[in-house]
Amino acid sequence: MQLIDGSYHNVDSDEHSFRAAGRKAFRNAMEKVKPALLEPIMDVEITAPQECSGDIMGDLNSRRGRVQGMDTWGKNQLIKAQVPMAEMLNYQSTLNSITAARGSFHMQFSHYDPVPGQLAQKIVQQAKEEGRIRGEEEE
Image (cartoon, rainbow, N blue to C red; front, side, top):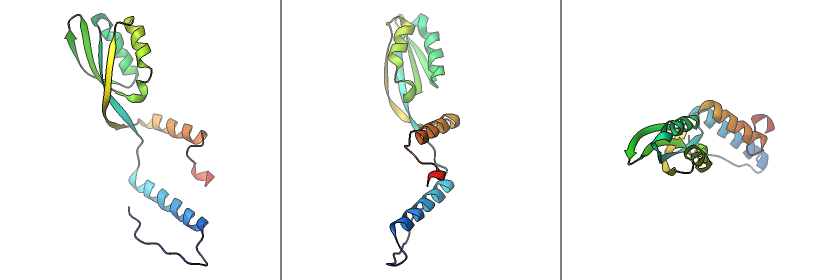
């Protein structure tokens, strides 16, 4: 969507009118394009003792992660997964707990994915409550 033209008149134009027109145009555009909230997805590699791999994979699944594969590396297991960054913020302490501090992990950015519907609604609602975004009724 692209704004092609606009006009100003000394008598009829004021700041309030332009703001109202801008809100209406923005709302109209958002209804047409169906915006999506995106989140960063990380490539994660975890090295841990083989006996801990089941617990680690269960924990990754609970964090909305997708296990991509596993390799044996000596007495350790290398687990590769993709996990939303928001779910990895406190991972080191969890990994220490699962592996008795014998595991380590590395992560790097992979791509963006849409946030699942119910979680996106929760994020938007929380932002409204904190005053970071306004609802239609407030305008």
